[in-house]
Length: 176
Image 1 (tube, helix red, strand yellow):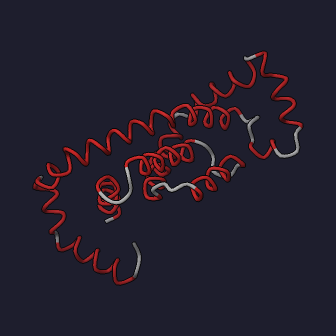
Image 2: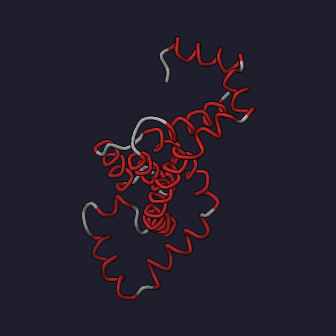
């Protein structure tokens, strides 16, 4: 049932509610959270930013989950990339030393090669993720939504007694 709920929520995020920019913004911010460690200063700042901005929270949590799984696969790359940023760029070495001696900056754990590589990669990827998701959502709402509703497996899943029972139990408990 867990996977059916994820698929249903994913389709619901794409077709309903907020504007494509809000959904794409939530997905982009969730991807940054998913790729970088959450329990750092930059993670806290991202959560505050998500709370302040009008983004789709379902997209945030979906991207957070997906990119957290992906992040483990790319840890060796993140380590290499963070190592390059921290040690191989000569003109930044004094900046890193000054930042490390600042009172609050060490809470970011920027001196960890994996964290540095994850965060810089996440920031770089956030822009194409935002524009790609925005375009995907617009195209889905324009062209794919009606086609997906006509697919037999979608109709079967929607009319399934198991799905209906799950929906009744979920709605009875007040859990969305």
